[in-house]
Image 1 (cartoon, rainbow, N blue to C red):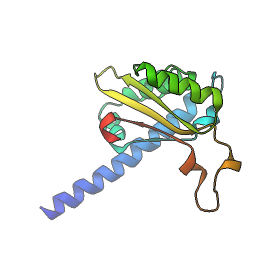
Image 2: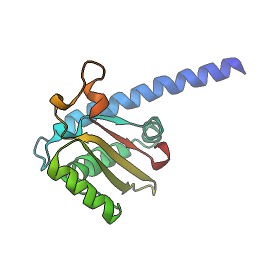
Image 3: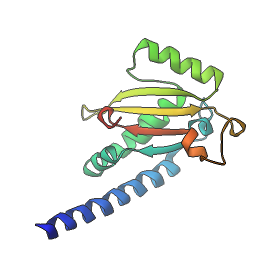
Image 4: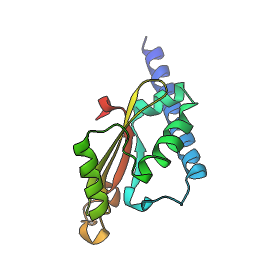
Length: 149
């Protein structure tokens, strides 16, 4: 039993890394610099391990998540199916570019919902304590399932 557990755990780790690399490479190939919002304000983009594994089981979702939702909706200010309060908060954050948060909620073709959350939108380095933290600590975007939050 220990051998199977170690084998399965190692397999998942390797598989997760391969899928993550596929997503990153695909994102770099497909990302357009022609967006309405400044892409650098979204910071470093990460994916939850649960979403990474799910995409690994459904590779056709790579295009849906990265291009159709992240690039063509979230990066252009289409927040998906969020409540009106979140839309107001997002639009306020975009307008002020002062390090606020953004939330987008979308339903995949498989029926599952994903969240895209950005923290530190538009935060400038002069407002960061870069001696104790990294830029990624202040400004990042995570694509995940709601239950991953």
